[in-house]
Image (cartoon, rainbow, N blue to C red; front, side, top):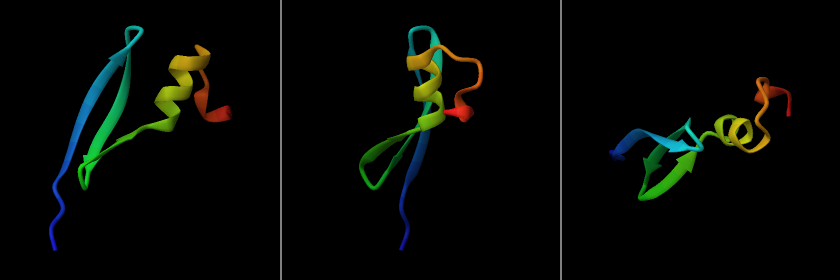
Length: 46
């Protein structure tokens, strides 16, 4: 059983958001999304 995983970088408001496609669905890094939406330097604290 093999699943193809593709990882890419998305840009949103000039910042990068890591994303991966797994089993035909996009998965985004929650830490990256929080950083962009809150404009904080420490998104892991959320």
